[in-house]
View (cartoon, rainbow, N blue to C red):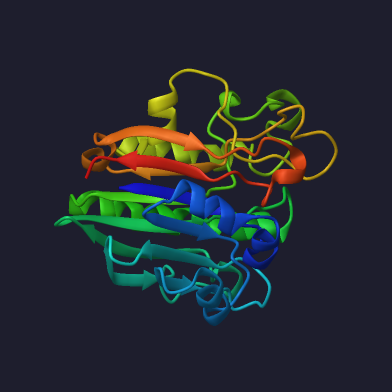
Length: 266
């Protein structure tokens, strides 16, 4: 099962920049999308009848939005759950959707997650820090269930200095590189979740998945690794390969994030 996670930075803008061409070439079985920034009908119209779709738009128009798309005829999508419960505020909406994908009699719970970006010492950071424990509670429930599952998406947090080109000037000075955020990602690994790409890539710098649109960040590979596949042990053990769809040049990018694909032998 080939599962791709991608923060689109707006699906309509991504399509204009070549997103659908990328799908045609790479041909994933499952697409987990973040920052869709469009309603369900628009997303359905863009992807077409080849995909079974479930979406969770943000209640604030033009913000966030997550979705799951499964190739019709290859797999089914059931037991869809959107959001993290009644405690979701408007700014928390459009950040979490999950469902069970079944192919060849094998089922995997897939989750598309878009964590708050935050901003140090502002209400945006307060919203992020309130949301992270609620994500952790749901992840603990899934882990305890014993089912095969993967939480994919834009976590907006690095795990260590290996995950960002410029660690020293950013560490504890900028959202996404704060110890108070990083501890959540590492605690989830300690609890039993697997950071699949780190497991497969090994002890190396990167591989990065996000580069700012500004300046020469992309050309100089001044990136961040903030997109993840966190898998339960039973699923992580089947992961055989990963790929980061980094564009060949700045003008060929369809998002400021690169697609992150993992192949699981299930």
